[in-house]
Length: 115
Image 1: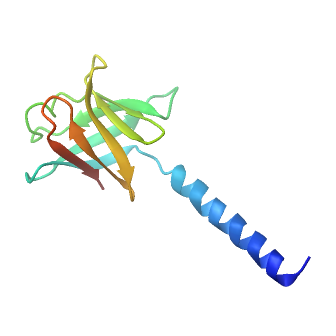
Image 2: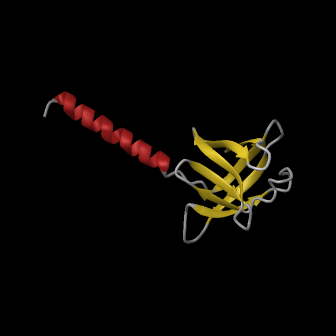
């Protein structure tokens, strides 16, 4: 094997390891949820004991009407769904550079979820 092919294989392995680590970043923890131009409110996402891709949401009291009813979250292949406690979808957000962006289903209002 030549030096160049060894370097290429090493670089590919390093990049795949970084991509794998990035894909496994936990969704759980505190997030700032912005709706339009309003000040962000805090959502705390916790994982279910049996499934790390779903869990409970605790919104802060300053979350605007309609968003303070978020009770669950579900991670999908392309993003994150915010759900009511009964499982109705409130918003669907797509992952973008470590944050999530999307819109509320009831009125199309733009949402952003970031750390």
